[in-house]
Length: 415
Figure 1 (cartoon, rainbow, N blue to C red):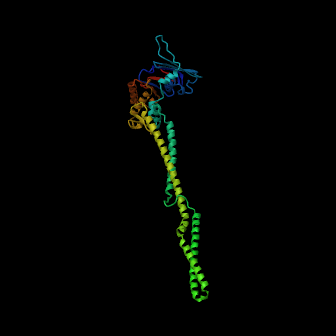
Figure 2: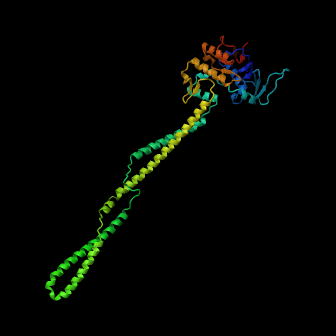
Figure 3: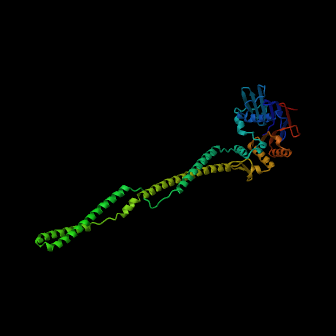
């Protein structure tokens, strides 16, 4: 399918223009602001319609206009008034010379034709990032949602990583004591145990003192035995009682044993030190748990970012690129494994033109508004590529050179 003819009346700068492209490359020449771009825009208006039509498509001072685009298989007529635009799409003529009319003309055009705004010459002059976005749109890859999620995960992971480093530094400044108990010890409990032990030891001391007293008394009584014969009976009775008391004291002493309080005293003196270690261990474990939590969050976010990158890589791998060897990464386009911008000018133009043709396989048509940027060799290359693909290129070019198929002046095609 090709452009057989184009008729434009009162659209943008064009007052009246009729062209019949009869070769692979059709060049519309003329000075600036004469209507060259308006001719190319008219083709886009006719096919794409909708948002592709300028807010004020009519030529200044006119109240109505039209575009008639003959594609052979379809005849597209778009009319303009001050109130808006209307579209009529007709099929091939029958034997009686009539054309069927399609009720949903724009849907039919949208089904067969993509956006014709891709300009290969303009594309070559774009920055790598801008080229990348155009190719993504061309092959139907929109990573905006994934990129937004990835950025959110990346920013969150960066903050988690920063907190993790801070906590890790805090953990390195702490010390964990293996000898400290799990909980802080009670000094009052230890003091109570010490008091109980001291009370017990006082009883032992009292028993020892009592036994010593009885020993002294026994010795004293023995000394008085001889001297106090007359009181022998009484003294012997006292001796007997004293002996019995002594035996009772010995038995009592045998049942008692002193408690060594030095370990308890040492434990009491170390209470503050031990409790400091316990608190330090508790702080260490808290910080350690926070570090593990942040490490887990960081890994989770890393996994999410990886999943997004893998999803994008899968989409890229499954995408049908219009030119063999064309691909892209995060930095921009690549061609045969090398950055697209490193390819020669001729190679870049060749690839860009091929992309434009591939974008619209039903109607292989390219509209080039920057034709003045092409030298003679580049023009020959574009013509050669269009002929090879049995395609059409319609471009505008400042000047009146021999390469210009039509010349437009003040909105009209010169005869």
